[in-house]
Image 1 (tube, rainbow, N blue to C red):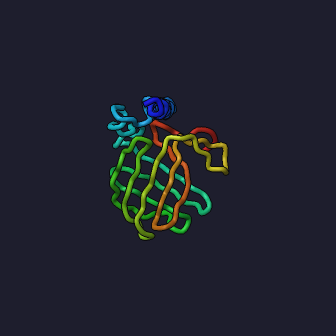
Image 2: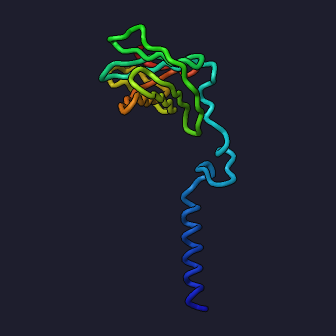
Image 3: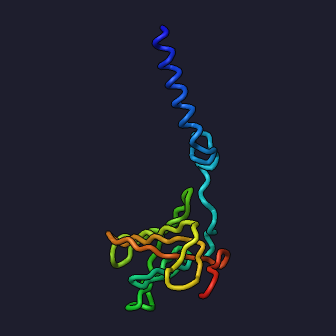
Length: 146
């Protein structure tokens, strides 16, 4: 029996060590944040986004995403579905380039070309291509030189 006790003690110490590494909001069972989506952008808000190299941008408003490029300043507008997860919000639809998902994450972002600071990081997946950019809303505006 004495050889079992050190094993149990080691197992308990390992469990407590892992538990100590997590905060209450890390998604452990019983955490109420597990069931609440991120609410930093209201359904009624317009999300504006920009990206560089290549230049692209657009907006999402009223379940419609408009994607623009220098070659298509009018843009392509498609219906999208909104999903609010724990760390941001995404919009999914289909552009002419393929399936598209625009992910909006709360994080200070820079376009790398100006002193403008944006409150959201944007990841845009079109087909197999992934683009990185920045975003803002009227309630969470960009700051600096616009």
